[in-house]
Amino acid sequence: MEPTSSTLERIPQNTVELSVDLAKSALNLIETLEEDDDVVQVFHNMEITEEVESLMGTD
Image 1: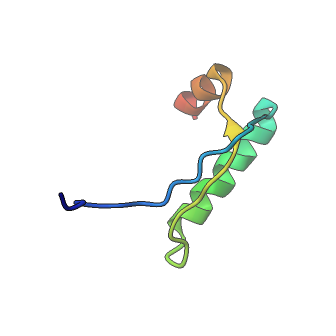
Image 2 (image 1 turned 90 degrees about the vertical axis):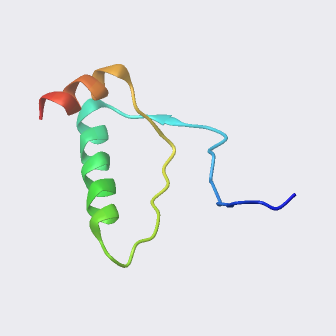
């Protein structure tokens, strides 16, 4: 049996719940980092609540 692919995945053992304002700022930072050509992957341990998800859809 030969593997077809492999990846390194960082799974947090604990998460952090942020306020809506801080979560929006963190998501903007994550988006900015992901757009940078020198950045390969971005990991975080932020718990995205339903409230933050609903606000992301309206922006």
